[in-house]
Length: 344
Image (cartoon, rainbow, N blue to C red; front, side, top):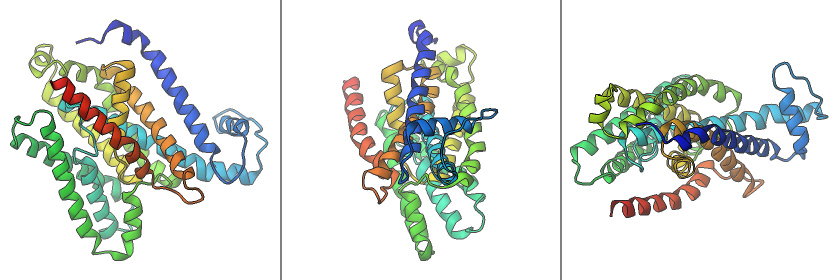
């Protein structure tokens, strides 16, 4: 079923607005820090980093190094992680046709978190194994939640899958806590990772980019297919869409996106449920616009969340996962109320 003509024509405008918000949030992220650097100097220096562009920003070498080695990779990593989590949430919601579906609630993040913790404990010298382990854990977590939800039947309606995800998340988190006890000296590292951190630097950014690119391309290419699936499997099949293959591909892509994000940033909740819902309210429900706007909006949201985490109790730093929970928990209650009103 095609998207309405109005929202379709307005799609480029929404994308441009979202890109503008992202640009402003990234500049704000680059500005924050102990060194006093003017916004204009940051803009000039950012332009100087572009290929074939040479601009004198007036910054000293030490200030340029501060921007390039500390602030820039942190802002970029936050943008990548936020975009992946938001787009994965939109993908899960399209696959399960459940507005409450989210990487954090469906067990994907907990599964990836358990697998990553095991990699840290058992394979501390093999950092490259973390994304692979996280991917396997994310797929396993979603599979457990989906299987448990199906076993419970349809009596619970759309909440059944969410409840199954909560149960799986609690179970996997308990196992993760148990595993941590075998490596007490790694508890601080694991604890910091669990609360969320995007300060991993360029190494973590290069590590996550290949997975991010593959998952983002797959999800964006399936926007139209998710629109067709939203009208029902029987009608989708009659239109020539292989519903099972589409669901499987989107599920794997969303799990890969979640795994990649969790592997480099830890457990950052609610991004995948807040951003897609905001996008739907502003730009409509077509996944051809929800997916790209979720990618851009999630990036901007997490960059701003990281900015808050760095400044609200400065010079100390608040874990970024705490900031997203402060925003996401009330928003989740609001969505529950809206879903209940729609059902009645």
